[in-house]
Image (cartoon, rainbow, N blue to C red):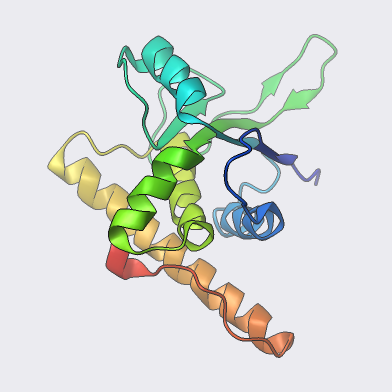
Length: 181
C-alpha cells in the first residue's frame, strides 16, 4: 500500500506554529479514518489569502477560519473517501484535497476563548478532513452527524497522543477536547 503525501505548508509569518506536532496529529487522524494512502495538503496562511479563496470558492467577501477544498467535485457520502482517479500515465491518484487555515483569524478566536492555537489546530484539521470526507453541517441532521464524527476523531486523537506521551514519559499533550465541539 502506498502511503499518501501529507504536506503542512506554513505560508504565514506572524505566528509560531508547531508544524511537526500538527503533521503528526494530522497523520493520526488520517490513519484513524483509514485514508492514510490519500494525499492531503494543509496550508496555514493569512486573512488576505483566505479571503481571496473564500470569495472565489464560496462567493463570500470576508476572511474565515478554515476552508476545505476537495480534490473532486463528485458527490460524496459522509465517511466515504473520494474515488481514486487515474492520470494519463495510468497512475492512481488518491487525493482528499486541501485544507486552508487562516492563522491570524484562528489566533483571534483562540484569544477570545482562552485557547492555545497549537492545541486548537488539530480540532480545525479534523473539521476540515470531515468536510473532505463528505460531512456537512447545512442541516440539523448533518450538523449532528458531523459533530459526532468530529467528537469521535478528537477523542481517538487524544487517546493516541496520551499513549504516545506515556511511552515517551512526557506530560500529556494539550489538545482541546470534546468540550469545544
